[in-house]
Length: 100
Length: 371
Image (tube, rainbow over all chains, first blue to last red; front, side, top):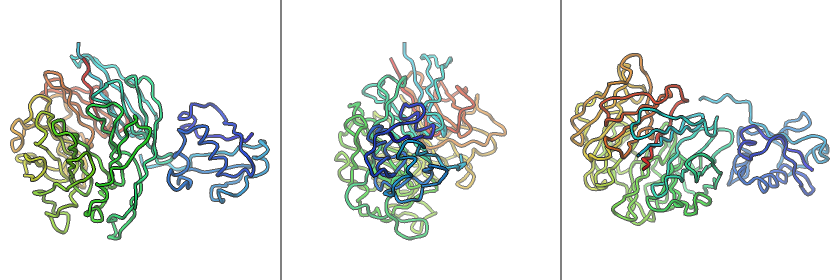
């Protein structure tokens, strides 16, 4: 099982507490995990990736194993520790104060 | 006994304010969707328990929420707003052409007759419609594909379609307003559109009387007389008596004719309300005084309404969607400020009181009159 952590606003939107666990067929990539996440929680579609382009939204980050994977190819394999469920893929709202 | 439900969208969530018909004691519910920007929420005229809300965030984008029980519970519905066909381009700040790009939903306008049909005005400017309660959205492409569209340009808040008026007497007639393109009308349910900006004069554009390019802030109508439209433009308060074919200025004795909201009394089609703002570069009320101005003559002659409103050291703004009227008698008038106050007048504007004073900055106010 792939473990995914979500920012608080998206946990509220998806009506979940704590981590989300997903079955994802190999190869386990960002794209595959996000496809599985949106299939399980359709209300998250468009909140992490743009609806049309499927590109990461500007103020979303992907962290795992103390690494920032945000700018990695969405089709690159995720770290083995994420694939094995040892570490979560962390979906994070970027540290950005905003103007309001 | 009648009651009212006031739907308030703020920069950090939605609030629902309810009262009986006296409009003296209020229950406050919220924040709903705390931390999210709620540009607009509105109830269906055909089913007052059906509410729609536009929820957005700089981090997480656009979400649409729907309630079937008057806001007690909510469910997410569709948030896919895909421009149909060729995306095309519009004028950008630097004079270049730029492709349309979805940013957010500014305004949700439920059908007058069908709770499952709702229109969405979005940024970059386009009109969408859902006929299944907000699950799927289809663009009404005739507007964005109008031949003038490459000349549309964003206002300071973005190129937003912020006003949608559904004509209750002429089925298929829709009015929309776009900043900064102007006002448009469809007579065939949104298939085709024509600009209706004749008579507008905007000194801030190269041709002050151009067909498009005007920064219309808000338009309003009385449902008994939908051919009469009132407009708060960037500068100038305007009126049309022929469904937008021509406009004339009615700013009259207003202290300044810059502002955002405009609305019409529920029972007196010639009584209108605006909130003058100092200028386009100073978005707050003039002289530190929060004054609603009312005309009982359809414009030109305005009176300041001040009783119960702060008359010193006040520097708030009232945004375009942040004023509404109820259908009780006497008519109730409501508005919200960027300072987080929501004011009510239960006597058509003669006197005011704050329902709440410390909400996040208010973006929109709508009211439902319930029997």
